[in-house]
Image (tube, rainbow over all chains, first blue to last red; front, side, top):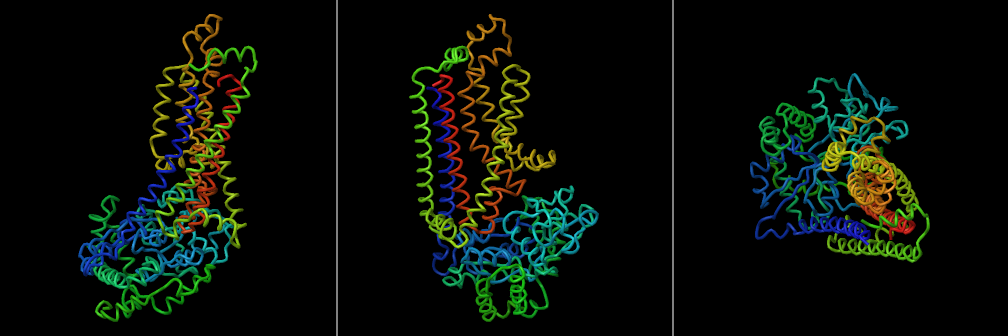
Length: 353
Length: 280
């Protein structure tokens, strides 16, 4: 009757695993459910921001805002910047984070398909840096047509949605190419396992190039999918019930990014030395990334006039056209709520300059 | 220890012992009881965790998932997607299960026969088990180019170690007396292994089968996420990344129930076979 023991243990084990999984779920939810609104007299309480990527120069502005105390000046008592990548929309919608950084297409899809109670309240990048990265001596994918018959490395989750949108916008069927599941490390591209790799032109493209390889980029923004990225999302509840929190956060963000772009090297240094220390970042690459994003993605003629983080009417129109091309059925007001940013800039016009 | 004598008599006489029917019945009913109990526990944990989380967007309860699967316009489509993915996952799990069990059984036999083999194989098996598969995957990707082999390796590794340890222990449960009997009749180490050790290791073998069934599914899910991009493993990760929370819950529930069902089936088969061999 010794026989019955392994069975009982197996059963108990699987039950324990199930319980542990559920418990960790419950615990993580408990941790975040302490509402930030109960911050006391004047303060806005604790702030949690879900970043879209590891802590590299992509968030130079957030690092500046934190280290220069812009978040605390704005009224927050503490700031937690959580590294990605993760399901940003979910983390914000479930209250794990107050704000998240993501992009318009992913938000559009999640709102359209799942009726997620979230909206974009402002955007860091006016243009998205998504690209299909390929090697000049390899896939050399320069046009959407070149995608056909190729093996493309696409990360699961939000990026899979983006790639589907790229194909839809260019009238290419998924059957015409092979999608290979990859993680975020571009080595499958370098070792030839895939012909193309979904990446950031400001990140992986620079990394692969720095290994001495000539690269080709098929930019989403130039191939039917212009949309804003590193956009700030908040829940409908936050927007409606805690507008002062949203405005305070946007103010700190604008100040942080102004500083970051005014001192591209210094803010990249923060990423390398302090915030992203554990990732062993290379300063030259981070500076290159930071200056490229500041010059081409964050600061445009329109932001010079309207202020950072704003989305002009014509840019909004572009995003809606992108939604249509990608088959995302949503109205502008379901995805964007820029009223608080406008209010903030009216109250404090000095932020524009 | 267990029923060495009876197993030998079965091997010789091939006679089913009296009382086998009752043993089978109690074994089967116990297996089903365990399955139902586990199902009940999962259901309670599910409902309670949804209540605790209290966020309708991410935490979906049984009613939400039932509505999603049966009461929406595109429910039929959803069910088809999940069932297709489930079919792929079960196929992948079968590959991993067979690969893992085969390697575990062969390795266990060699380990019992030879000390040097044990000294080489065990540490490797331990390392394969100790290093997280996510960390091992890039290496597996580089070593094996073909998807079938990658699947077999990733899913097999999850199965391998517990099965190996169990089977080795089972094979070692031969008493010196039994060994002597075989030796007296002129049998060598191989005869001991085939005639005595394997029959007496049956309980351990089946315990490994039972543990390995959910293990193989876990391995298949991992392999699908990390390598193949098909099946439930990929579907659930994609759904999570795209905030398709109903789909995430539906996938998790389907996989859990199927694992439980297969575990129960393994338990039933175990009690049937062991009763046949008079081990119970």
